[in-house]
Image 1 (spheres, rainbow, N blue to C red):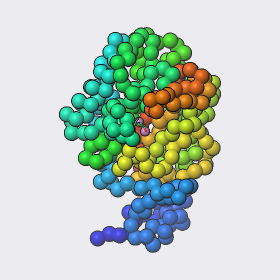
Image 2 (image 1 turned 30 degrees about the vertical axis):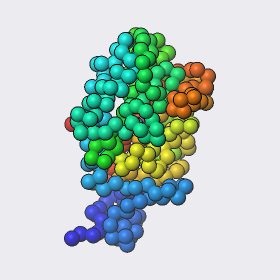
Image 3 (image 1 turned 45 degrees about the horizontal axis):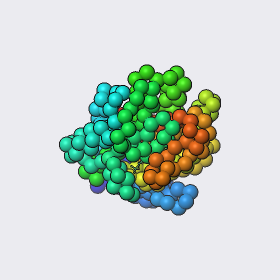
Image 4 (image 1 turned 135 degrees about the vertical axis):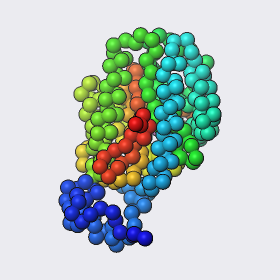
Amino acid sequence: MRTGPKLSRNAPCWCGSGKKYKHCHLKEDLMRGQPRRVVVDEHGREIIIKTPEQIEGIRKSSQLTREILDMLEERIVPGITTEDINRWVHEYTISHGGIPAPLNYRGFPKSVCTSINNVVCHGIPDGTVLKEGDILNVDVTTILNGYYGDSSRMFLIGKVSPEARRLVEVTRECLYLAIEKVRPGNTLGDIGHAIQKHAEQHGYSVVRDYIGHGTGLKFHEPPDVRHFGKPGTGVVLEPGMVFTIEPMINAGGYEVKVLDDKWTVVTADGSLSAQWEHTVCVTSTGVEILTEKHG
Ligand code: MF3
Ligand code: CO
Ligand code: CO
Protein backbone atom coordinates (compact mmCIF):
# COMPACT_ATOMS: atom_id res chain seq x y z
CA MET A 1 0.00 0.00 0.00
CA ARG A 2 1.40 3.37 -0.95
CA THR A 3 1.29 6.08 1.65
CA GLY A 4 3.55 8.64 0.01
CA PRO A 5 2.40 11.44 -2.27
CA LYS A 6 2.03 10.66 -5.96
CA LEU A 7 3.89 13.65 -7.35
CA SER A 8 7.49 13.09 -8.47
CA ARG A 9 10.19 15.03 -6.60
CA ASN A 10 11.12 17.18 -9.56
CA ALA A 11 7.59 17.97 -10.73
CA PRO A 12 6.16 21.44 -10.05
CA CYS A 13 4.54 21.48 -6.60
CA TRP A 14 0.77 20.92 -6.46
CA CYS A 15 0.35 24.21 -4.58
CA GLY A 16 1.10 26.23 -7.70
CA SER A 17 4.17 27.97 -6.27
CA GLY A 18 6.14 27.11 -9.42
CA LYS A 19 8.84 25.56 -7.25
CA LYS A 20 9.88 21.93 -7.61
CA TYR A 21 7.89 19.64 -5.31
CA LYS A 22 11.06 18.61 -3.44
CA HIS A 23 11.78 22.26 -2.60
CA CYS A 24 8.19 23.00 -1.56
CA HIS A 25 5.47 20.79 0.00
CA LEU A 26 7.15 17.33 -0.29
CA LYS A 27 8.47 17.19 3.26
CA GLU A 28 5.16 18.29 4.75
CA ASP A 29 3.19 15.73 2.69
CA LEU A 30 5.57 12.89 3.65
CA MET A 31 5.24 13.75 7.33
CA ARG A 32 1.47 13.55 7.09
CA GLY A 33 1.68 10.28 5.18
CA GLN A 34 -1.58 10.94 3.35
CA PRO A 35 -3.26 13.76 1.45
CA ARG A 36 -4.38 16.56 3.70
CA ARG A 37 -8.08 16.43 4.55
CA VAL A 38 -8.86 19.89 5.85
CA VAL A 39 -7.51 23.40 5.43
CA VAL A 40 -8.38 26.04 8.00
CA ASP A 41 -9.78 29.37 6.78
CA GLU A 42 -9.15 32.81 8.32
CA HIS A 43 -11.98 32.27 10.84
CA GLY A 44 -10.57 28.91 11.97
CA ARG A 45 -13.30 27.01 10.12
CA GLU A 46 -12.35 23.76 8.39
CA ILE A 47 -12.51 23.55 4.61
CA ILE A 48 -12.91 19.87 3.71
CA ILE A 49 -10.61 18.64 0.95
CA LYS A 50 -12.79 16.20 -0.95
CA THR A 51 -11.60 12.70 -1.85
CA PRO A 52 -11.82 11.47 -5.46
CA GLU A 53 -14.85 9.35 -4.43
CA GLN A 54 -16.61 12.37 -2.93
CA ILE A 55 -15.80 14.45 -6.02
CA GLU A 56 -17.36 11.77 -8.23
CA GLY A 57 -20.54 11.92 -6.11
CA ILE A 58 -20.64 15.73 -6.28
CA ARG A 59 -20.01 15.54 -10.04
CA LYS A 60 -23.05 13.28 -10.53
CA SER A 61 -25.27 15.52 -8.42
CA SER A 62 -23.94 18.61 -10.24
CA GLN A 63 -24.73 17.01 -13.59
CA LEU A 64 -28.33 16.39 -12.50
CA THR A 65 -28.53 20.08 -11.54
CA ARG A 66 -27.18 20.99 -14.98
CA GLU A 67 -29.76 18.73 -16.69
CA ILE A 68 -32.58 20.38 -14.73
CA LEU A 69 -31.47 23.85 -15.90
CA ASP A 70 -31.19 22.52 -19.48
CA MET A 71 -34.71 21.09 -19.22
CA LEU A 72 -36.00 24.57 -18.27
CA GLU A 73 -34.34 26.40 -21.18
CA GLU A 74 -37.14 25.86 -23.72
CA ARG A 75 -39.99 25.87 -21.20
CA ILE A 76 -39.35 29.31 -19.72
CA VAL A 77 -41.38 31.67 -21.95
CA PRO A 78 -43.76 34.60 -21.38
CA GLY A 79 -47.02 33.46 -19.75
CA ILE A 80 -45.71 30.71 -17.47
CA THR A 81 -45.54 31.21 -13.68
CA THR A 82 -42.64 30.74 -11.29
CA GLU A 83 -44.79 28.06 -9.62
CA ASP A 84 -44.71 26.16 -12.95
CA ILE A 85 -40.89 26.26 -12.77
CA ASN A 86 -41.02 25.00 -9.18
CA ARG A 87 -43.22 22.06 -10.21
CA TRP A 88 -41.01 21.13 -13.19
CA VAL A 89 -37.84 21.26 -11.06
CA HIS A 90 -39.42 19.28 -8.23
CA GLU A 91 -40.81 16.54 -10.47
CA TYR A 92 -37.67 16.19 -12.61
CA THR A 93 -35.45 16.01 -9.52
CA ILE A 94 -37.53 13.35 -7.78
CA SER A 95 -37.99 11.26 -10.93
CA HIS A 96 -34.20 11.16 -11.38
CA GLY A 97 -33.55 9.96 -7.83
CA GLY A 98 -32.65 13.34 -6.34
CA ILE A 99 -33.98 15.65 -3.65
CA PRO A 100 -34.44 19.42 -4.21
CA ALA A 101 -32.14 20.92 -1.55
CA PRO A 102 -34.03 24.23 -1.09
CA LEU A 103 -37.29 22.56 0.03
CA ASN A 104 -37.58 23.06 3.81
CA TYR A 105 -33.97 24.29 3.99
CA ARG A 106 -34.10 26.69 6.97
CA GLY A 107 -37.82 26.89 6.31
CA PHE A 108 -37.64 27.75 2.58
CA PRO A 109 -41.06 26.69 1.27
CA LYS A 110 -40.29 25.66 -2.34
CA SER A 111 -37.92 23.45 -4.37
CA VAL A 112 -36.10 26.17 -6.32
CA CYS A 113 -35.37 29.90 -6.10
CA THR A 114 -36.80 32.17 -8.81
CA SER A 115 -35.61 35.80 -8.75
CA ILE A 116 -37.14 38.30 -11.20
CA ASN A 117 -35.73 41.73 -12.24
CA ASN A 118 -34.89 43.68 -9.02
CA VAL A 119 -34.89 40.47 -6.96
CA VAL A 120 -31.27 39.65 -6.13
CA CYS A 121 -31.74 36.07 -4.89
CA HIS A 122 -33.93 33.67 -2.87
CA GLY A 123 -37.17 34.59 -4.68
CA ILE A 124 -40.01 32.21 -3.76
CA PRO A 125 -41.96 30.66 -6.63
CA ASP A 126 -45.63 31.65 -6.70
CA GLY A 127 -48.38 32.54 -9.15
CA THR A 128 -46.39 35.42 -10.68
CA VAL A 129 -46.69 35.30 -14.48
CA LEU A 130 -43.45 35.91 -16.42
CA LYS A 131 -43.85 38.71 -18.93
CA GLU A 132 -41.97 39.87 -22.01
CA GLY A 133 -38.90 41.87 -20.97
CA ASP A 134 -38.34 40.24 -17.57
CA ILE A 135 -34.97 38.81 -16.56
CA LEU A 136 -35.10 35.78 -14.28
CA ASN A 137 -32.58 33.83 -12.23
CA VAL A 138 -33.37 30.18 -11.53
CA ASP A 139 -31.18 28.67 -8.80
CA VAL A 140 -31.23 24.88 -8.61
CA THR A 141 -29.54 22.77 -5.93
CA THR A 142 -29.86 19.00 -6.05
CA ILE A 143 -29.00 16.35 -3.48
CA LEU A 144 -28.10 13.03 -5.11
CA ASN A 145 -26.85 10.14 -2.97
CA GLY A 146 -26.12 12.68 -0.24
CA TYR A 147 -24.01 14.97 -2.45
CA TYR A 148 -24.92 18.57 -3.40
CA GLY A 149 -24.65 20.36 -6.76
CA ASP A 150 -25.58 24.07 -6.88
CA SER A 151 -25.96 26.17 -10.05
CA SER A 152 -28.03 29.07 -11.34
CA ARG A 153 -28.60 30.74 -14.69
CA MET A 154 -30.34 33.81 -16.04
CA PHE A 155 -33.28 33.49 -18.44
CA LEU A 156 -34.39 36.30 -20.75
CA ILE A 157 -38.18 36.39 -21.09
CA GLY A 158 -39.06 37.19 -24.70
CA LYS A 159 -37.53 40.41 -26.00
CA VAL A 160 -35.50 42.13 -23.28
CA SER A 161 -34.13 45.71 -23.19
CA PRO A 162 -30.47 46.17 -24.25
CA GLU A 163 -29.66 47.44 -20.72
CA ALA A 164 -31.01 44.31 -19.05
CA ARG A 165 -29.34 42.01 -21.58
CA ARG A 166 -26.01 43.75 -21.01
CA LEU A 167 -26.26 43.29 -17.24
CA VAL A 168 -26.98 39.59 -17.73
CA GLU A 169 -24.04 39.20 -20.13
CA VAL A 170 -21.53 41.09 -17.97
CA THR A 171 -22.57 39.07 -14.91
CA ARG A 172 -21.93 35.84 -16.82
CA GLU A 173 -18.53 37.20 -17.87
CA CYS A 174 -17.80 37.93 -14.20
CA LEU A 175 -18.45 34.29 -13.32
CA TYR A 176 -16.19 32.95 -16.09
CA LEU A 177 -13.38 35.46 -15.39
CA ALA A 178 -13.49 34.24 -11.79
CA ILE A 179 -13.44 30.58 -12.83
CA GLU A 180 -10.29 31.33 -14.88
CA LYS A 181 -8.59 32.24 -11.58
CA VAL A 182 -9.31 28.86 -10.01
CA ARG A 183 -6.09 26.85 -9.77
CA PRO A 184 -3.80 25.62 -6.98
CA GLY A 185 -1.79 28.47 -5.48
CA ASN A 186 -4.24 31.23 -6.43
CA THR A 187 -6.44 32.65 -3.67
CA LEU A 188 -10.09 33.39 -2.99
CA GLY A 189 -9.13 37.08 -3.16
CA ASP A 190 -8.05 36.57 -6.78
CA ILE A 191 -11.57 35.26 -7.53
CA GLY A 192 -13.33 38.14 -5.81
CA HIS A 193 -11.10 40.72 -7.42
CA ALA A 194 -11.70 39.41 -10.95
CA ILE A 195 -15.47 39.75 -10.46
CA GLN A 196 -15.39 43.16 -8.80
CA LYS A 197 -13.06 44.64 -11.41
CA HIS A 198 -15.16 43.53 -14.38
CA ALA A 199 -18.48 44.53 -12.80
CA GLU A 200 -17.28 47.97 -11.70
CA GLN A 201 -15.62 48.63 -15.09
CA HIS A 202 -19.14 48.43 -16.49
CA GLY A 203 -20.60 50.79 -13.87
CA TYR A 204 -22.28 47.96 -11.95
CA SER A 205 -21.92 47.01 -8.29
CA VAL A 206 -21.24 43.71 -6.52
CA VAL A 207 -23.65 42.55 -3.82
CA ARG A 208 -21.76 42.17 -0.53
CA ASP A 209 -24.32 40.54 1.75
CA TYR A 210 -24.61 37.22 -0.14
CA ILE A 211 -21.63 35.15 -1.22
CA GLY A 212 -20.49 31.85 -2.69
CA HIS A 213 -19.64 28.93 -0.42
CA GLY A 214 -18.02 25.57 -0.06
CA THR A 215 -20.48 22.82 -0.98
CA GLY A 216 -20.72 19.12 -1.77
CA LEU A 217 -21.26 17.28 1.52
CA LYS A 218 -23.59 19.95 2.89
CA PHE A 219 -25.52 22.76 1.13
CA HIS A 220 -23.30 25.47 2.61
CA GLU A 221 -19.80 24.74 3.94
CA PRO A 222 -16.67 26.80 4.53
CA PRO A 223 -15.08 28.67 2.86
CA ASP A 224 -16.93 31.94 2.22
CA VAL A 225 -16.39 32.91 -1.42
CA ARG A 226 -16.68 36.70 -1.70
CA HIS A 227 -17.32 38.28 -5.08
CA PHE A 228 -15.06 41.26 -4.28
CA GLY A 229 -11.59 41.56 -2.78
CA LYS A 230 -7.87 41.98 -3.27
CA PRO A 231 -5.60 39.74 -5.35
CA GLY A 232 -3.32 37.44 -3.38
CA THR A 233 -5.40 37.60 -0.17
CA GLY A 234 -7.45 34.94 1.59
CA VAL A 235 -7.45 31.16 1.45
CA VAL A 236 -4.90 29.57 -0.91
CA LEU A 237 -6.63 27.13 -3.28
CA GLU A 238 -5.68 23.46 -3.16
CA PRO A 239 -6.75 20.46 -5.25
CA GLY A 240 -9.92 18.86 -3.87
CA MET A 241 -11.58 22.09 -2.71
CA VAL A 242 -15.18 22.32 -3.98
CA PHE A 243 -17.09 25.59 -3.83
CA THR A 244 -19.57 27.78 -5.65
CA ILE A 245 -18.93 31.08 -7.38
CA GLU A 246 -22.21 32.98 -7.75
CA PRO A 247 -21.81 36.72 -8.32
CA MET A 248 -24.90 38.89 -7.83
CA ILE A 249 -24.39 42.11 -9.80
CA ASN A 250 -26.67 45.17 -9.51
CA ALA A 251 -27.18 47.81 -12.17
CA GLY A 252 -27.39 50.39 -9.35
CA GLY A 253 -25.98 50.31 -5.81
CA TYR A 254 -24.91 47.13 -4.03
CA GLU A 255 -27.25 47.60 -1.03
CA VAL A 256 -30.04 45.07 -0.63
CA LYS A 257 -33.02 44.48 1.64
CA VAL A 258 -35.00 41.41 2.63
CA LEU A 259 -38.79 41.45 2.20
CA ASP A 260 -41.29 40.58 4.95
CA ASP A 261 -41.43 36.96 3.73
CA LYS A 262 -37.93 36.74 5.29
CA TRP A 263 -36.44 35.27 2.07
CA THR A 264 -36.83 37.50 -0.99
CA VAL A 265 -33.76 39.73 -1.35
CA VAL A 266 -34.25 42.87 -3.50
CA THR A 267 -32.02 45.76 -4.51
CA ALA A 268 -32.45 48.69 -2.10
CA ASP A 269 -32.73 51.18 -5.00
CA GLY A 270 -35.05 49.04 -7.14
CA SER A 271 -32.41 48.55 -9.85
CA LEU A 272 -32.07 45.32 -11.85
CA SER A 273 -29.89 42.49 -10.54
CA ALA A 274 -28.41 39.42 -12.25
CA GLN A 275 -26.68 36.26 -11.02
CA TRP A 276 -24.95 33.19 -12.48
CA GLU A 277 -23.61 30.29 -10.41
CA HIS A 278 -21.45 27.21 -10.88
CA THR A 279 -20.06 24.60 -8.50
CA VAL A 280 -16.34 24.13 -9.23
CA CYS A 281 -13.60 21.81 -8.05
CA VAL A 282 -9.92 22.77 -7.81
CA THR A 283 -7.86 20.15 -9.70
CA SER A 284 -4.09 19.64 -9.72
CA THR A 285 -3.85 21.64 -12.95
CA GLY A 286 -6.70 24.13 -12.60
CA VAL A 287 -10.45 23.78 -12.39
CA GLU A 288 -13.33 21.47 -13.25
CA ILE A 289 -16.71 23.16 -13.62
CA LEU A 290 -18.84 20.42 -12.07
CA THR A 291 -22.19 21.95 -13.07
CA GLU A 292 -21.24 22.53 -16.72
CA LYS A 293 -21.96 20.04 -19.52
CA HIS A 294 -19.26 17.34 -19.60
CA GLY A 295 -17.82 15.59 -22.65
N1 MF3 B 1 -28.97 28.04 -3.96
C1 MF3 B 1 -28.68 29.16 -3.10
C2 MF3 B 1 -27.18 29.31 -3.12
O1 MF3 B 1 -26.65 29.43 -4.17
C3 MF3 B 1 -29.20 29.00 -1.71
C4 MF3 B 1 -30.66 28.98 -1.63
S1 MF3 B 1 -31.14 28.73 -0.01
C5 MF3 B 1 -32.80 28.52 -0.18
O2 MF3 B 1 -26.48 29.22 -2.15
F1 MF3 B 1 -33.22 28.11 0.96
F2 MF3 B 1 -33.33 29.66 -0.53
F3 MF3 B 1 -33.02 27.63 -1.11
CO1 CO C 1 -24.76 28.56 -3.93
CO1 CO D 1 -27.49 28.31 -5.74
